[in-house]
Image 1: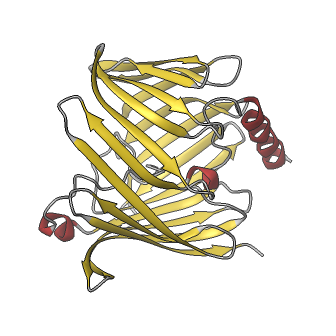
Image 2: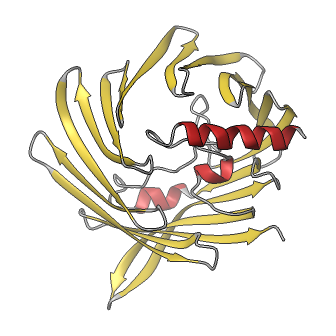
Image 3: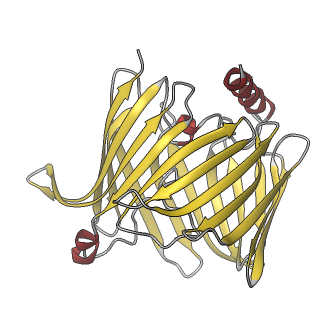
Length: 292
């Protein structure tokens, strides 16, 4: 019953925020996946264009996602191939992952890690970060309330506390403040909202986001203090997947990235090809299995 109640709550939050920033409904949704996905194996390559075809040249990393039937993570496994990164000419435009679960920010990025999700209750989730031999290298504890993440604690291999985060929301369930406390300081981020916009501030850079009618980011403006630094625009296809970004820097630089996809019968993409204006080509391939 607990899982059903939680899912219904997330659905209600999505309806409440439909006029602004899109709310992530589930772990599956955070990856842009639809229907009851059981597993996803995703590989990321750098590629070349030869004779009007794409040739994979280097495998950079591999993700293996496993899901429970209720669309929550069961585990995330990541393998990094550092030799491929070292041999690539330029990886400045490697696309950001939709999920950073496999590499918590408080931990040094290893060449391999396995994240096991343990749901102690509807309000407590424990992530255990394991190495290739199954040894514990870190732990994350997340506490929820009303379907929202309220706090997060990150621990080292020895069990010492590395950081502690707290999150606050407004009456429309939108994040208004996140504060991360470290041993020698803290980092605080505030979010303010107006019609179809969000302003995020607190660090060296501030960001203003605009959203389309579906709650997806249509533009992102970056500021250092109050001085504009860059502006990026986003376009999507009918499946809701990103097909183009166009960025303009205040120094006159211009960047454009185009994405092409292939889809399975359930409209989840299985191939994404990214063409960067720098000449880099990246390919992400997915093998997806579903629950019956």
